[in-house]
Amino acid sequence: MEPIDDMIRGLDDQQLQLLAAQANRELRERSRRIDINEITAEKMQDPKFAAAVRAEVDRTLREV
Image (cartoon, rainbow, N blue to C red; front, top):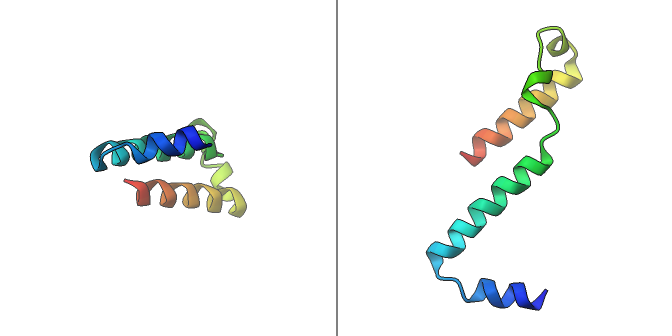
């Protein structure tokens, strides 16, 4: 991991913030568990599914 550490240390603040934002977007996309097309009124009646949807929405809104 040393080459990436050296690269990160060589970035100025603006470049580092841009890299962090892009990395966060990628991580968020990888961690998504619910596709928007899966959300239906019927499925939202399931308390576990509804909680998972709310958690994902909350997580997304915190990142905005």
